[in-house]
Length: 156
Length: 156
Length: 156
Image (tube, rainbow over all chains, first blue to last red; front, side, top):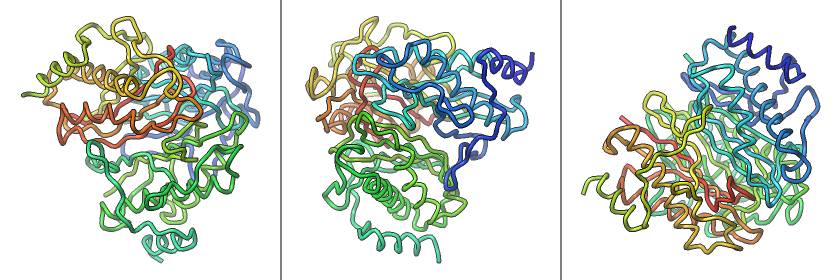
C-alpha cells in the first residue's frame, strides 16, 4: 500500500473523514514551509466544526480516548501535508512532534497518550515516520481540546 | 511605510518603548542564529524592569489584556531582531510561534489570546509575517507573566 | 579539558552515571538528525529505571532539586549526542532548549530552574553552549517528573 492508501485506510478505521477544508485564520497559517522544512500549527482533535474529544485526561477522558485524540491530531496534520505537497511521498522525515495533553493534577501518562500519535506516524511513513517527541501535561488547551500536537517535518 | 516605521508606530499605539537594552543572562541568549534560521527565547510582557501584565487569563486578566500581553511579547522579539539584524527587511518569514497562556482551569480561549500576536506580526511583516502557531494553556509562567511566546524566524 | 572530559567530570559531581543504554520506544526516537540539525526528544530526570526527581516545584520539590533535575535532563541529552556523534566536538551550537517545569499554582521561578540546565550546557560547550531557551510551568509531566527538557542542536 502507498502512504496515501494507508492514510485513507486509517481514516476509515477511525471513523472520521479528513478530506474537508481545514479552517485557516487570516494572520497565521496551519502550515509554513521554509526550504525543506515544514512547520505545522498545533492541531486539536477537530473534525469539521466539532472538537470531538474534550476535557482532561485523568478526569473527563480515558487514556484510550486521549490516544484517539492524538491520532486525530496526526491525521489532520497529514491531511495538511497531503494538500500542500500533492503527495505524501515527498515527506522525507517527521522530525519532531510536541504533544500537549490536557491533564488532571495526578495524570502522569502523557507519554502513553503520545503513543497514539507515534503509532499513526509510523504506520503511514514507516522509518520516515520515526520522530523525536515531547509530551507535556497542559492545564488547558484551546476549545477544551484533550490533546494538541504540533509538527516539524522534512520534505524533499 | 517600512517595517521599521510600522514597528515604531505600533510601539507608540501600545504606549510602550522597546528601545531599551534587553537583559541577557550569562549562559543563554535571547536570540541564536544558525545559518538562516533564528531562534528567539521565550518573551514575556516585560517593559524595562516590570512585567506589565501578570496573572491567569480567566481569573485575574481579561482577554483584551491577554492580547495586549501577546502583542508586547511580539514587539520585544521584533526589537531583538532589529538589534541583531540591523534592519527588519532581512526577515524573510516568521516560521513558528509557540504561545503559552497562563490560564485558569476553565479558560479555553488561548487561540484568541494568540490572535493579538498574529495581528502584530502580520501588520509589520505582511505575507512574511504569516506564521504557524501553537497556543497552550500553561499552569504558571516565569514571574507570573500572563503570556510567553517563543519564535523561529527565517532571515536572508 | 575536552568537552567529553568535562561531561564525565560533571557526571561525577552530580553523582550519577549516564553511560547506560537509554531506552528507545519503537515508533519514535530519542534523537533525530536532519542535515546538520538534531532534534532531541523531551528528557526527564531519569537515571537507569528511576525518575530520580518527581513532584511539583513550589510544593514537593525545592528550587535546588529542580535545578538538579534540569542538570540531569541536560546530561541525558549530552549522553545521547555523544553516542550518536561519536564525539562532542561535532556539536556546533545548542540552538534551543524548551524547559517544562512541573509547578504549583504559585511557583514563578521557572527561569531559575532552567538556570541549572544553562549552566551545564555552558560548562561543557562554552560559547557553543549559549542557547535560546523557553521556560514554562507545566501542570503535570510524564511519570510525575519535576522537569522535562527538549533540544535543537546544530552539528557539523
